[in-house]
Image (cartoon, rainbow, N blue to C red; front, top):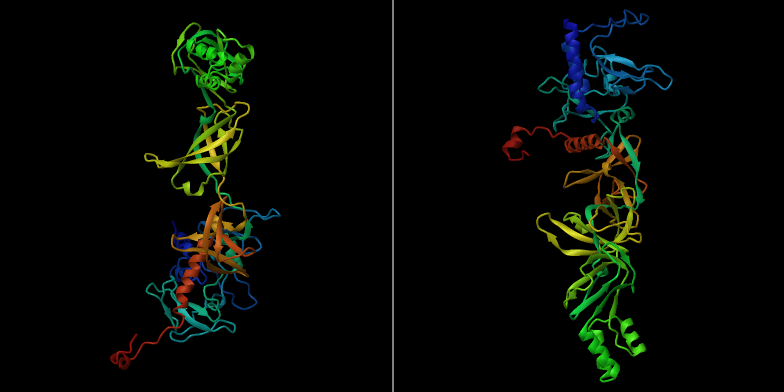
Length: 501
């Protein structure tokens, strides 16, 4: 490898190493580092002969070294890291390491033939071409160190001038249009919108406990006949299920017909659980039936059948169990962190894993009072209509609960907020490349947005991309603002009198 190629590669590495710091800062140390590198490697890099006279055109040196970036062929401030074409199909120009590697607009000081420092005597502050006056010089690496006169740091880099008017806006940051384009700064208008913060939780379909019926005898009886009803069958209210004979029920019916203690005898029949339609039939026919027909108390599905023809049913035995599945429950487990956002009455949706393309909508009807210690979750009950019986107990479901208010609030995209944990800031776009850090107070989040309760209003424009670079520049300028007026060194007499700061 030739010495010129090695020098070109070194220069490119140096430029790339400081690019990260310089991309987000006005007056970055990139120019100083590049000038220093050019000075140190000047005898190795191919040079461009200066014209002998104003009429003589300079001879361009052949570019060497690796391609650092690509620039618009018309010289516009538009760059790319990969080969690119313009809208009319022309290729971007490749810029190599030996060329002028510049990622920012040159200021007036750099536009001078000597870079603004070549003919400047140490200890004498000069102004660039124009009317602006140098206020002080700041450390090129961003350290809180200023000087009233030009100087160099320990690495030999020139301190950077700060001109009058640059810090008049306090914390406002000024970014050139070209730098805004290259750093990818994007903004968005602050709007009022409804924020929904969905809470998602796993759940399972369960039976509605209030829609379960059990058929059991309150006295011993003998089963005469069981109707053709099996487990899984859907039955309707009043549909016959079985016929039975019970000595105690027959005795109560006979007493009821004799008129002895009429009111008491009817109450006894009711206490034995005899269906009302059977009691009305006894009163109408004035006969004691040998077999009492037992019917379904409600619509539902037979989930249990524990009876057969001729068997003896003891008091309390479950003969049939019916469940109405026209409404079901979803029991969902919500994490302790999300519990505060959930309230009874909120709308909830469930997607059964059996039907991933269908959404079932219901409401939160109960938040159970205890947390599961092992999982740190709280159980919610969501009621869903199920007229077709598609939702079956035991199915797993993915639950989404819509939380938040239905009133619009001032909101910005999540990316617009710089949150350090103790400080929340957005960058307000004031136009013409000016940005102001604005402390804000946050509210609820949802749909990729966050509520702003204080600090900005609807209609403002905030930065949503590359805001950390601008925030870093703002912090640097705020630190330098306090050091903008360097204090002179107190003399020995003042130090001796105890007046030194």
